[in-house]
Length: 568
Image (cartoon, rainbow, N blue to C red):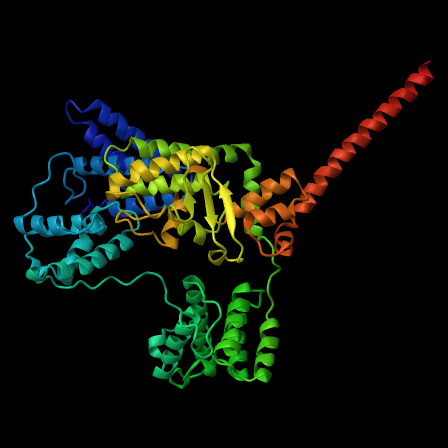
């Protein structure tokens, strides 16, 4: 696991491997090309690229984050070629040759892998299990100390992207599989802490009375018991409820920072005294540097609504809380400067072309896979999402939830549709879209051919995992963003497709705000007008330029006629 004391570069590794007699010429060309590509992506000479896997991993992470338009399989190929070359050069101790057959697993660990119930667990655990087998570790001895050795080895020898997350996923998969092997007496592994900084107070640290209020609020917000006293008429969606509970934790955090002891926060009512509510809003306002914040406004609105609808506080108190809530400065309801700049990129015809070609290219890669796996599934889903969102710009929550024969109706010989019921749409309006024929072909092949090869049956969910269950919101978003960055060369949130749809419509028909409202499912035409009113200036200028050109042309014609009369 050691590298020579002096700096050793990829150029040194390439030179050493190239000196060997009768080298494989094709492999040498591939290695030379890989080094040139990495040098071009990083603007660094090959003599400046480190051979140490730990440092080289940082270089590849920078390349991936830069969004320079590199296709995922291209980056993976360059990474694999570099690691193979480093191994053969011998500069790094501990790396094993990737060319030959691997030694078989020990009987115990081979049986363990065969008994794993899902491919997901097998994928997460196979590398750790091989380490245990090679090190002759018995199941009962696979403890935290052994896992720490494995983690250290990975850190020194692997080019794995987001290594900390991979280590966490392996530990969680190990603990998940433990109950399936009671005969092996496997010890639990402590999952490494997340690198995400926790800034909100945990409800578990508060008095039991507060936790009771929290549980009662969750039950009330679900609206399952319509006959209960003070029953809520309409249940909150899981995502909305999660957002409100996060607002509650944020409010508790600000109140504690203001000097209130955690043990004195006895319940929701403690947050909603005028004095404490004011302290919470002051803390939130200071956190945002005194700038307008929708985040702060909606937190205050959630708390005020809890006091009004759940706790049934005195109307006089609610009136004061409402006044304080609406005193919070909040930005105008319009598209942000960041999103305006992002959508402006699509004024470039080359960017539009890249967006149109991305799903086609991804689909070719998907169909070329001889042994489809979960990575094939991710590529196929990214291709479908990137093809769908420009023509069916639904919110990401609705996109993630799409289910065959419930939302997505495929009729190859008729009109295929996507429908979103009113109760599943944020604005409370039902939506329906026709699916273009080329996208229908992709969806049919995905449902009937590609996915069954991976999960063993036709999928229920459009965005399913390799075990057939639905992927979560964050996973779908990250997958789409990853491939958009690879093909477009810049970061783009899937929600921005809604703004792009509005831009395309209003560019062709500047007064079509009503059409955009219906297309995007906005509850009010005012929402549509407020969001996209800034673009009217540009369109007005374009109209002015056309009128100016006409006026100049007319003036030129008049001047020409006048000169003609003088000459006559």
